Each structure stands twice: as structure tokens, then as C-alpha cells.
Image (cartoon, rainbow, N blue to C red):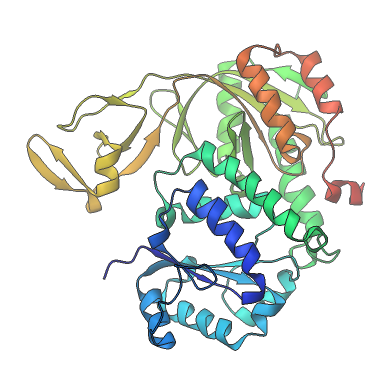
Length: 400
């Protein structure tokens, strides 16, 4: 049985949140066909008329590679929802059962689930992007990053209209995760230490790094940091988790689980932990397309790369087979990975949500657009003036 469906479990009282998620994130953002989505709250995507409900639910879960649970107080009080949760839990791998928290519950309420993982917040940008990143293999390996970013913002605007008051976070929402440690120890102080260890002779401020050895030292230190899974790169097209940094023999770097290959030609650092001004700003020059080495031939900016370095087309990677020297090769034992490049240059900020350039997403997107177009010159004065107008994360303000 083919297992590629997405099973959505929710309370009928929360259907507006679910409809907005399915339409904006799954369909428009991730380009997932309606026939892959099972959701009882949406006409045409639930149980067909005349079907026996328990058998239908079991059949749908068996066809699914991913289950998304919309957890709310209503969900916790629904026997049907809890039965769906249990069925998903015993049928699918734990990593493929995704609990999303609605505004009326917090991390402390997850104990009843006994699912061994933290819930993602359905009403935050970070929660949605983390979900897309973690589950892209079950969602759409060929996702369009720019489209996803646009639809996440559209989705958040949509649910904000449903109930603005419900999206205000409770004061104890981060209690279990120790927000001070997450903010300062794991992010602000951690990046500050990396930057200062690389340029110990520099004072607080914004500095252009021209020494190639210093660039390598900084990126190598960053690649070994524990915080990369929650660390952002932000550019004109949107944002995504850094997650990993790996240097290639060519001198280029691979960034994130999307395996974006970047060619770093310019670098700026900002030092000032007290004001949360710290960030790494890099410029990645546009690259030539890959030469496809399978029998398909040609060039492309998005390809698959086998464990022996052979470059195949993205369609071959997606379909699981490649034709090389007339022979059809099954890729399941070739450890193939998607790799992509950009044909245009990009200015990219690296920072966490707790740093000003990490927290102010929309402003950074616009600023990067202006940097890319040459409307704004990259220099200390322009960057500092921009930083001064950015807002602090409320958690930072709380502990100042």
C-alpha cells in the first residue's frame, strides 16, 4: 500500500484553523494535491458517505506517511480525537506524528499525549517553518522555498483574523523550556562567544571581514554550534533554519537541510551582545548551473547528487531511479541528496530570533532586497542606522 497521504486530526470546534492551514500551507505553499490530504473538517477530503467510520479512519491512517494533530482544549476533551491520536501513534513512526499547539494550550498541556516530543505552535512563523523543515520528505521534497515563506505569512494573517485574542501567548508558556537559558545561554551568549573568539582584537561595532582565514574560522566554529537547529538565515526571499554548514572541496559551503550551495565573497560581523545587535552578514555570489552527468545530460540549478559525487537530474532524484551509461540505477542505496544553487547573488543575515535582525523578519526581507539591488550600499553606517530602528524580542526586554 502506497503511504503518501497526510492524516489531519482535529476537533470540529477548531476547523477554521485547520482549513486555513490546509489551504495556505499544504496546498498553496507546499503544492500538495487535495487527494493526498485526509481531513474530516473539509468537504471532499473526509470520510465518504456510507462508509463505516472506524474502518475508514484505520484505512486512511495506513495510507498516511504523516499525521498532524491540532491540539487544543477541545481536542483533549474529544473521545474521537483521542482515538485518532492513539491510532496514529501506534501506526506511524514517532517522528511522523506532529502535534501542533493551538493558542488555548501550552507546553505544559502536552503531558497527556505521551508522545515524547515538544509541540509546535500553529500560530507562530517559527513553528510552521520548523514543521516544513522537519517533514519535507513526507510533504514535498521539491518545495519552493519562496512560495512557502509567502504562504506562511498569508496563513498567519488569516488565523489572526479568526481570533486575535487567542494568539496572545500566556505568560507561563515558556516556563518548562526555561526561556532565559534558551534566549541568553543558548543563543545570545553563544553567538557572542563565537564572534569574539574569531576577532578578539575588535571592539563592539560592525566590521567587514576580508581575511579568508578568519571567514573560514568563523564559519567552522558556527558549523559546530549546538544552536543551529533554531538559528535562522534571512534573505530577500524569506527565511529558513541554518541547521548545518558544511564546506565543500570547491571552497563553497552547504547551508541547511535544503542543501543550498553558496559561494561566500563578502562578510560582515556585528558585535554588541548587550544590545542584541550581533549577526553575521554574508554575500553569496550567483553560481553556474550543475552539469548533469546521467544520460539525461544538460544543466540545472537543482539536481540530485549520489554518494559517489555523480550528479543526476532532480526528476531522477525524485523518482528514485537514474539512467547512467545506459543502465537504470535504483537510488535507494546511493544516498542521493538534493543540491541547489542560485544564479543571482544574495545578501544573507545569520541570527536567532533573540537578535534584532532575527526577530524583525519583514524589515530584514526588505533590507536584503535593497542590498541585493544595490539601492543601499553595504557599509558600517547604513547597517548601524538600520539596526537602531529594529525592535527587541519581548523575551529580551523581559530580562533586561
